[in-house]
Length: 123
View 1 (cartoon, one colour):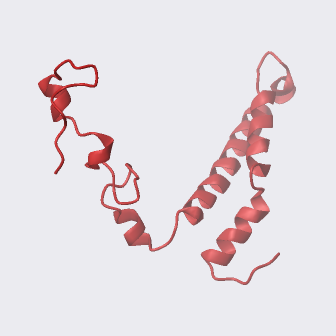
View 2: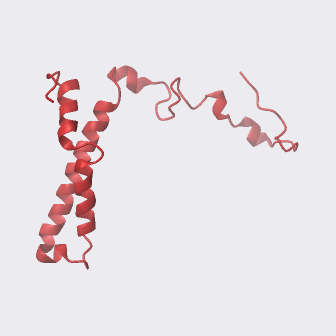
View 3: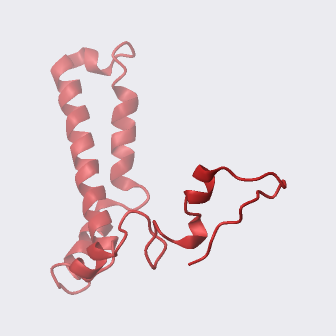
């Protein structure tokens, strides 16, 4: 185990609290791959697959939920939902953009079908 030097680069002594804190190089709060969110790598070991599948499913669900929410808000306000005073049109544009960028929903569905369901490549 490496120890933290007792003096800072400026030459002044470090406080006890600073010496007790682990530095990123000591790796106490990171796993072998350098990720801080899953300290023991349990998630990857349990799933046995990379995060592309989960991220694609999350992107698809988030885009559909956002567009559904904005459409419901516009429908609730009727014709006023498209007026500038209500401010829903920019949200509709952003929600619509989530469906096509950076990967459109058809490519997300193709990825999930191929890697999760084991279907043949469809493009």
